[in-house]
Image 1 (cartoon, each protein chain N blue to C red):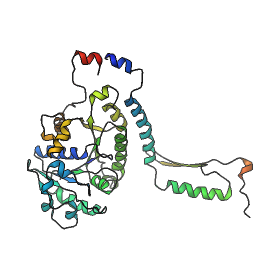
Image 2: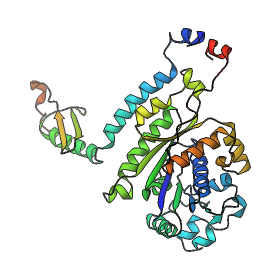
Image 3: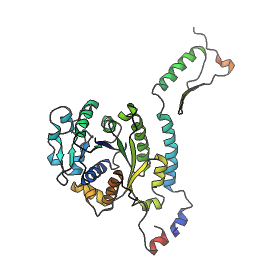
Image 4: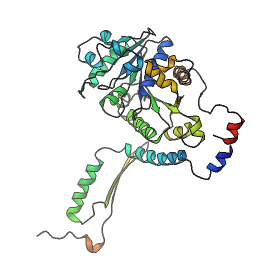
Length: 92
Length: 269
């Protein structure tokens, strides 16, 4: 290691920042990659059905798809609101 | 039976055409009958890098449309009689390439050639997806730079899902990493992703490292594939790449900085 390297080592190199950013991004994009195209549509339609009965937020529902060698798991997660906000107001 | 190689990257300007020209010339110099096809319809450039731009009469799209025969469109290289170039069309019609048309041309070429090198355009539009669709092997050209690495990873996803081999459930396309414009000096300074960093992220079989080199621009200026510049670092690196692709065990070069004198070592520049 040369003299200049000694002073440089106090700061994180731009290459190591690049590597960290890439590792996070690539891992995320790979997990997105295997999802079927219909997921966003599915999510929207399920949300519409649920909203007929319960007041839920736009972002209260998450749909994820996981895959391993043997099976695919479609996971549906809906967060219901507090009891008193739950009832859909009656239409006039 | 011929082998179809796609040279791809996603990102533009990383060295796909330089690589296509060098690798196809290298294969031909080894005695293999080789055709190199420019898939960049509308932005033809392989002809210029190969130095045959003034000999283009018919192109890939003419052949697909039956306006010319394959033999009329193929340009025989003046330096190596085993090498033929199929130039892209300059049409602005985005739908000029069809899967059937490309399949037909590749099928015809595979009767006469040992290797068919497909020079993919940048992006993920039709030209790029068709260039890889029929491939047996893929050379993923990557620069040690964030956007290039990300795009390469994206291309790997497409190679794995949208190729003929994937659709027919055959053995997947063999994917190779070619790291280009590599500067060991900058890697040492922590200014550039190292070969190991890129390998860790993409986990691909390494075909070779092409150093950042003045020889590449000089070669394209002259219309000579850089592999013919045997004295240059990039030319030698491409020769190694071709030998490795053909199965020879060639140690990797141009990965580490050249030895420096005492002064250089002391100041680590």
